[in-house]
Length: 145
Image (cartoon, rainbow, N blue to C red):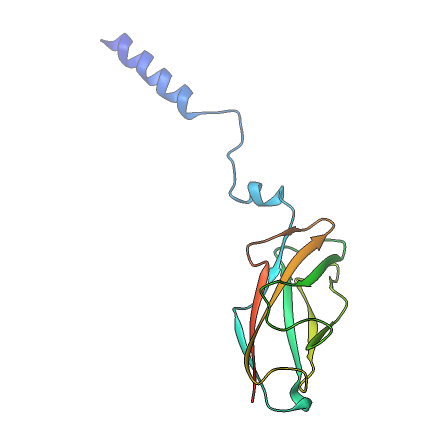
């Protein structure tokens, strides 16, 4: 009986000890490329006149990296308003190295916009070391009053 307890104790001791270091939750995150995505929820932009016709949209990255993160913004086919007609995009489309976010400006043409609400869907794609996260589309409702 004593021998069984000694063998059982030895088996338990061996099974509980390991030469490998334990896996930390951050180990998985360190090996992934940073994720780029739009910041903020879908929004509504009320335009009363030509003077308040600009809207700033923020793009963020999940981790600081040593190089700048470039990204591309495109108008989705589901958008009611068209780039070059009702709006123009302005900005560097780059998150500076060591930063968590960048922004760009949407300039709307008040006179060209239809009266009432219009939907604008912008798609995000990345160039370089960062991967696109889950928030890769921005939904903005523009209401001309």
